[in-house]
Amino acid sequence: MSTKLERTIARNDEKIAAGEFYDAHQGIRTVANRYVKQKAYNDAIEVLYKGAESLLKAKQYASASDLVLYILEVYTVAEIPVDSVSRNRIVSLIQLFDVHEPTLVKISNDAETWSGKFGPVSSGDAILHNLFGTVFAKADEGYEAEKNLLLGTKESAPILGQLLFDWSAESKDAPQDAPLFLSRGVLGYLGTENIRDATVCAQTFLNAFDVKHNPETNNVEAAGDTVITTYDAYPLFNFLQLLILACRSKNPETFKRLHTRYAQQLSQLPAWNPALEKIGHVYFGIVPKRQGNMLEDLMGSFFK
Picture 1 (cartoon, rainbow, N blue to C red):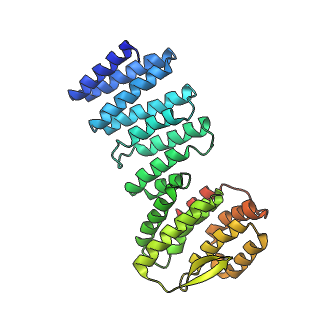
Picture 2: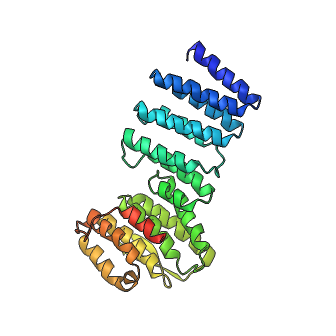
Picture 3: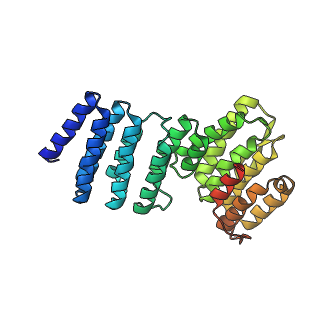
């Protein structure tokens, strides 16, 4: 870092320490603008990062969020790749926010766009998705949390499982409609070819359900040495667990038999059709009737 840049950052910190938040914020943007015009992108990012950090420590969340969004804008203009350095800047700043800060949704969306364009995965960086999903879960922003956790890391799955259970407990039809909430995690993960996290999400949800409701259950050997817990009063819990096992086997006949066995229950859930068609195609080579974005269809159908 150059001496000039150090002095600039120090002046900004002095203004923030003195409570001159507006002047500091505007000054930081002005300096960053100048660096961007000069294509001195690293200097622009450093000024914005240090300024956002100081404003966050002073609990000036709205001003800080503007600077974080500017960082992501510079990342995009400069074509900064997703790596430990570029990612960790965002992570360290987001961890300083109040989880209820409304602009976090915009930051999350912009981070997904940048990391999807300049990272290895078009859906965005999994670590950032886990970060934002965890933040939104703490803020009781269920939809935003779910959207991010489904694309997160292995640490995301138990968080999503617990979130969906807590969400189901608030339903006026609880506990009867609990399987509908679990399906959001299981079908969502399976649709992105993530059997591991579908399994963990289901286990987390069902463990919480058992503790709260103590339902009638049986342990059944389902495939080889695999034992699942079946629910007498909740057949869709059984279907979702068996669906995970069927996806592991990749046996089309197993999937078809499962579909037939639960045809009555599934006929009452047309919202599941796009997800199940996608799963049938991905794991079993069954050509779906139509193509679409499974996650969007599934989420959208629940929010109509």
